[in-house]
Image: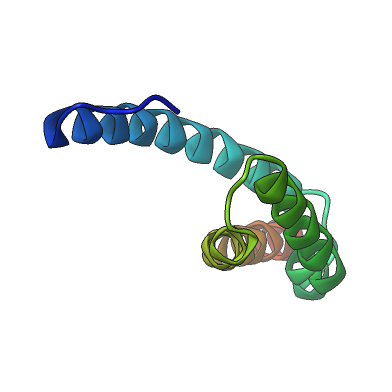
Length: 105
């Protein structure tokens, strides 16, 4: 992180980071969508043990970058919750599509 000489410079840097963060979140969402095809049911999508492993990893990463692990955990819990809900919808659509296709045959 670089020190800024004005609020405009702070905002420019935040905007630059937001563009990068959004691009990475979109890429992450693509992988979440791919994961839905490998999961058998809604419980596998929710995967609470995996969520807790992820939270521990991001807390450790935050600390390694002199960040606040509590803040990063809160952010990630929100991200994971939204992605799980999205994956549940996709998994449901994929499962119902397969069921509907099987019934039609």
